[in-house]
Length: 524
Image 1 (cartoon, rainbow, N blue to C red):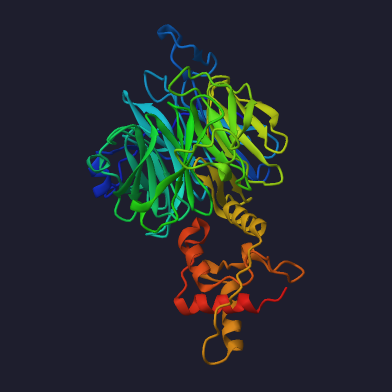
Image 2 (cartoon, rainbow, N blue to C red):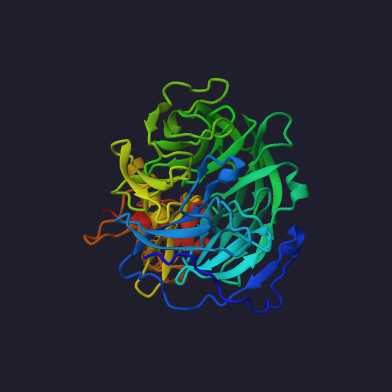
């Protein structure tokens, strides 16, 4: 279903108390609020998994020499596609200004699937539109430019937040609290020209690509999300650092460099970010790399060849082997580059890993050929091409699962996998590693059997009514996965701290010892 040029209702009075110290730091204002209620414009019973993307007019008006301008779509908007069939579900556009042209470069979705976030134009300026996912009506307009939006689970507050990178600014919105600004980086503290921001799987660190302020080239600023201050700066040896992707174990970060067409690998395993360092560097396998997407087994990385810092007309993706990347000055220019795939996806920016590992797909947004291209990672070739519903420019955002009652779960966005999809990947990576610790945790005084019983109870049901067993078994046959069997106190503690999908679980030292004892007692 297409609902075309959907305009919001008249703005309502702004709610009192929306401003925070963080919004004041960046000068962000709530410009308007709207009544976004109304009839649902699409049915989650018929579309349980959807792919949501921005749909813009393209780059540059024809009268200004724009070569990639959509003739049929002239305003910023959103498009929803069925994540299983690739069929168009719904779309809406927002001509909120006398000058309707605006290329909205990306789209984010809140962790619960209730809100979409993208850029629009209002009262003669670029703004952030917050859109009701059910009605596709604008709910709020904030006075900030927005490049991309990504969801993350914040380790400090234990809340699901939305990170906005606004062409040099970085701030977080609380989707459960009237979308107020609850954190922001002080530009003075950043000390450089910031570009894009990404949150690691632990929810503790924001890594921002920064192009100035280093002794040479550009790199990454590491920001503590508890204090929103820069704790470390890592030079990635490129004047044009862009995208950052994480291994879902949280050990490595990968940074694309658009100027030199390479990818840097940062070891994040030390708890102190000042001791993080570049441990690998490789040719990207394509020209002007932008987005980075790791495969399910993390043995392959898809590098989006946009042609950034060059011709900006890229039509291929590079393939590299992250596990084979060598440390500078060795720089593995050979074995770690697995090849290049021609996609015909013109001016491709981003690629999202589909949340179903059996499909093994990356969905590419093609903002100058006005389509989305599905790349089959098993066969390393294009599987299908999905035209945009209104012929507009695609900058992809998210895969979201919805229950019939509209309960939503974000599964994949430009910050990686989330929720049950992330938990599934962690389980798959652990099973593939096949490592079973030799030494079980010692039983507590008072009888091992009591501790085992307590550990089993905690394993089955922890915080929020969700237990370890929801991801790690036992299965129907009563078997527990070899990747979790025999886990030690230290390993469980580290996982609780570093795995984003487990950050909501709060266990005492005694609780962790009980769980470890239970796992050590499991014999099959």
